Image (tube, rainbow over all chains, first blue to last red; front, top):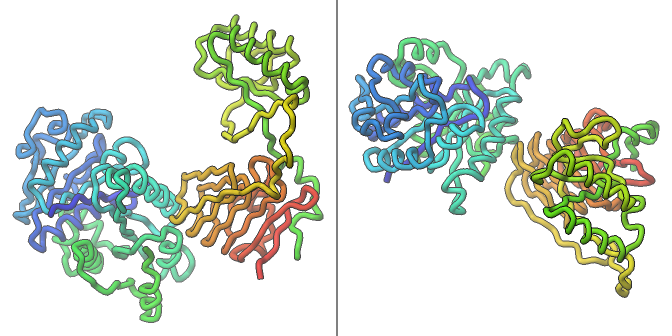
Length: 271
Length: 236
């Protein structure tokens, strides 16, 4: 059964694109057929992070508007056979995405892939709404800072109201991915602690990605961190997160924290 | 029992909001005016001391029609204190100011000429319905229930608001706004399990986080009005 996953956040710059690439690659590593779709029309970035920027011929807009076939626009990853990218257009604007066109493309993607991972633009505007509309699962990416957490809360409200699944009266599955986490700074009170973020947002935790140079290096090389530096702490956290999405139960690793806190965290995995 | 603002009574003047009647004319204006006159004749003086906002948004009228309408209302002793949805260029010197952003409430119009029913309903003996919210209330969401109580099982996020005609009960953390007694009920109260609110209000009298004693932060509290002052106490 295919799953459509939207990677979303209220604020920009919290690591949606990086997380989309890392999760997509991690899901493909375990044998799934995966398509990562860039919905951030006008500001495409996912192709850069995936290292495919020079291979883009057709993009999401072309397919949505019927100017190209889906097969023509999908770019197969050079490293993983089962990983594909549907890039966004840099030249068009967000209004070029039509609701009917997106619905048709998503249905087509569902037929071919096990996982369709959509990289949403930031915010609560049309592009973000279209990206989340057809999702079965949402990953809400948040930094441990107050503004990011509040905007994520807003997005969670939208996921519960504006998606097809919610409109059918079904439960929209949502997970929290905490990125750029620095345990030492959280301990000093310079950023929110994991438990505070969980208390405010009250959705289950999918993973904590530690602040690390490995993420930036991977981005610059155009390779998802889960492929480029699979042994690094952030890559391991992303791989664990992807396995949790597939339904595996894996103990949560809080970067550089004591054991006592971890057991506390498990008690806190809210509904 | 502790009172939060006894020493600062002047706060009242900043923290008051009012209910106003909104008149929204319909086309054709002449027929609407006639209907209004019939209504006014049944309860003499209904509009006498009533603040009235004129809502002309969406009406296909010209500046001239608008002036005529204002004049017609003036002749009927209706004091228009603000206009919503009018072209800004229409409102010049001597005209009522433009207002916007009003909140919807339910005002039941009871003409006083009608015989009062036995045992006029009051807040005390009317069956008060309540709204139960089982999910957390997220930033940007607004729950408005002018009929009665609102009970929230989860938390109310910063940037969210609960507006109830009667009491507000929150079993999680209140980080946003809680507004009780919104339709003019001074005996409404606000209860919450953990108080981190941005603003609380009862019957139009509000206080922002800065004005509230820090000792209530993070506690289970209740808030109520006594002699037009906001009172707060930690729940035992």
